[in-house]
Amino acid sequence: MKRILPILSLIIINLSCGLYQDNEEPDIYFQFLDFDILKLGRTFSDMAISDDGKNIFLSDYNNNSILHVDAEKDLILANIVIVGSHPIAIDLNADDSKLAITHEGESVVKVINTEIMSIENSFPISLMNMNDLIFVNDTTLILSSKTDPSCVTLNINTGEEVTQSVLNGEFAINTSNSTLFVATSSSLKKYNWVNNRFYQDPSISDPYGFVGNINHLIYNSEKDIILTCISDKENVANIQHVYSYNANDMTFAGKYQIKSPGLAVTITPDGERIFAAPKDSDEIGVFIIEFSQNTKLETNYYLSAGNLSKRGICIDPNEKYLYTLVNIPGDDDSFEPYNDFSFDLQRIKIN
Image 1 (cartoon, rainbow, N blue to C red):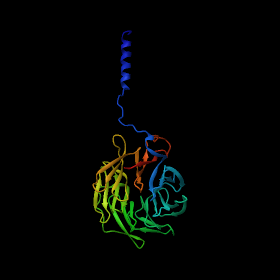
Image 2 (tube, one colour; image 1 turned 180 degrees about the vertical axis):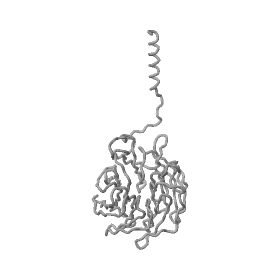
Image 3 (cartoon, rainbow, N blue to C red; image 1 turned 135 degrees about the vertical axis):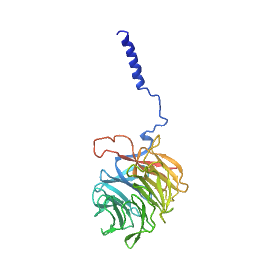
Image 4 (spheres, rainbow, N blue to C red; image 1 turned 90 degrees about the vertical axis):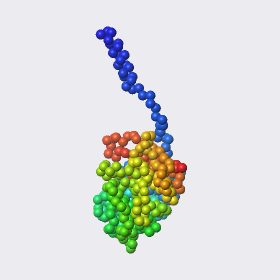
């Protein structure tokens, strides 16, 4: 035994050293400070940016509030306004003077005066489990629900609510003529605004060929195109990429291949550059992918500081920056009910 024990000890030492030996070094390592980040640590459901690019508004779903970020120079959290239960979607009116908010947790729409960042109106609504809203014009909003069969319009001057023959879904709008585009779970639809009512246009897009969840829908007036991000509803269809449609006749205009479900998309005002936020990461991180609208090919990649969010990307109208909502890996596995998947605001300088 005296002869065997030293040999066994040597074997054990060698084995234990071998278990923890790792000579592989990462090629690139990014730290939190490598990114332009406004640390917020909240769960966001929507974002909007003013036409001058100086003000960003975020709906804080878990904390029932709206955040106002001053983006003129540095990113500064300027204001927090407590609103209703679980704000799910927001939209700015044409001159950015009013911000409308709809809530998933209660049947109410609130309107904020953006100059003084205070609630100026609150309207009860017949819809439950609201999903999206958008300004039709300066006085009228249209709202959708996750469960109610049709949408309603709301006059923010009088409080009058009108049920519309519009299917529920995500909204985009051509503000010049109040033409509404609605992405349902299976197809795109177009509605024309006539005498304070929406009527379905004869042009209806072909069905997607699957049933999916709509993550984001936007319209660009310069190119007259619609862009939508769709993810797999039942985890069986393997839905990927960002889909494009011609707004005039609703025909399929192509797809932007990101090899992942799209979470959010934005486009430059001239319609030439498209930026897509994918769900899945690359080998060294999650990238925002820039495409040429004309060729549908990738032109640039922009590294984000973490995982991305549904509806969580917008572009500075002056085309200097992208703003994204990012979840930086950290303390997400907490027992605290509102601590899961907290997001920060990242600013990315674009080429």
